[in-house]
Length: 345
Ligand SMILES: Cc1ncc(COP(=O)(O)O)c(C=O)c1O
Image 1 (cartoon, rainbow, N blue to C red):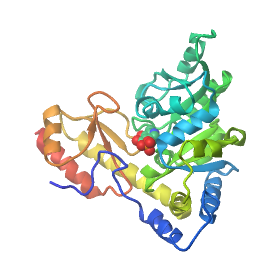
Image 2: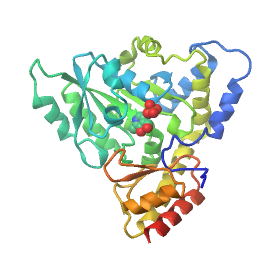
Image 3: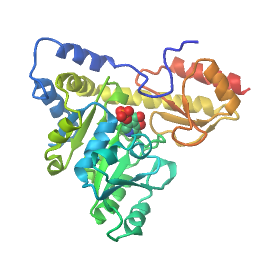
């Protein structure tokens, strides 16, 4: 059966109407190239307004580039980057952070529910201090995390303080930053620069944009020559307005938060439905748009035979990751829950 909406990833969804309308509006007449256009200026200003600070903003094509280039901006080749063992930069970016940082090594940290345990920072830094060990220089946090949990402002502050104690800079992979804000209901500044984050990779794709993420430097000094890094890394769009205009559409009038709140609410609905099915176990607190569920193997196979697409074992062994998007409907959720119930009977 061909299904219109799936739960395999939040990037299965299309472009939200607000981003689409801004793209269409940008598609009239000629504009200056390489980011020197009015759309890029307005989108940058919109991000500054949301974060209540005069940050430096760069629009790039995807999250791997945003993470890799921002980490490269913090490190020299002999440095190391601390991150959770499940972090996307560690597990799913094909070594791009190490590649773009010319060999900086990722060191993985432990912590329950996808969150770094602050004590792990001290352990990793003090594990070795000799010349033969790559010098720890950056901490990378994912917000919302790869398991769908969300760091509180206090947790981020504690991690940033622990990092600062050892001279580490703090980068945040915010592929699902909007979902985290929707979940916490705090000001974006409260979980970024006010909590000690130096640079954020602000995710647009999973929030409803077609292509693109924004790299937001709160410490402007770290952004020095980042435009050259983007160009060299193949991330300077010549028709930049088509990367930036959708951001303006998304950010204006709060569409980004509406969509994130909706996706989170659909995840809650899915969780509630699945919790009523015996044999199905929810693996992590549902705090954003992800539901991790342990579904018996024969039931999983039957769901796939019924046309459902979802990933199992990608982040954690055995769990199926079910992602909700800006356009997931209560009917989609009900249909999946009904099928899980039937195949689990
Ligand atoms: C936590 C996280 N970070 C970053 C990304 C961005 O990856 P991509 O390079 O596919 O845009 C993803 C996408 O799945 C992600 O889940």
